[in-house]
Image 1 (spheres, rainbow, N blue to C red):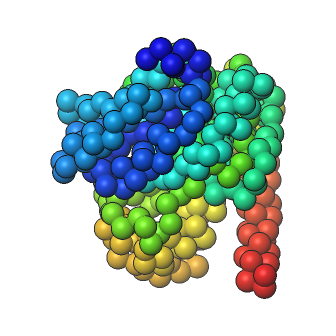
Image 2: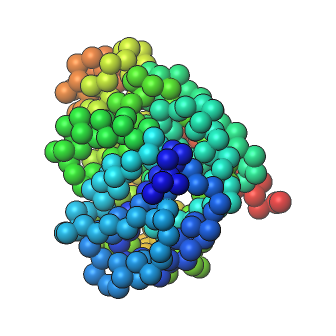
Length: 347
């Protein structure tokens, strides 16, 4: 391992029953001539031939480990990142794609900017790396926490990630929470600037190439069902209240959280439920979500918001103000999304 003295990045790939697809990805990754990174694959006790299939790839950059038991998707994500022994770790889910010939620019960014944490936008069209930096405190927390985003692309200083993951009481008590990085990023963002990198390094695998059904979600725990979204919503608000930022910053962030979840329990929920590919992937039947159902979901979200604020005296007085601002943000996002889709159609 002498050649890895200069390695500063570990690409961390948690996997489960995706052997054939992952082998193709690994074959490309190990061809890179940049020796400043290594790869860790953590197999979550696959039930098929995935582990033996992955082990057919032999390369000094690559380390393959298998859990003794299945520890769940969230547990596998967190453990995989914690196994990094380089300065930085980057999460890549087994179903996603990395354009490895572009990794050098990202490593140069890490060396030059020395970020504590951040994420790389998926499916970016930018051929030249650009980034935005957000100040620690309210700004970093708002931009990099409570997003509910696909986890591929999160990167961290490894020691900071391990420290934050070990210190998180919430994740210890809720080991299967589907969006652990939203919680971790809020704690990290209290103290450190956050970065969002726009660069065409990472892509979600095209639908036509991603035939396998979800191994983590089904109709009993589907993350975009309103009942599950309400759980996420409550967790985010309670977590926000524990942060050491100003009351004003907490109110601003809470309005963005409300606006985001209004969209998720209404229009995004409807889009997902009519998408045959999505429904098939998660073992459910497509259905038509009516305007009435969407409005009832939003009403239930508002009721939950009020109940949560009853637990949080510091935010309680701002319920109606926050709600009005959140509704305005929701309307703005709705029309911006319609305009974006219209422009895509007329291209």
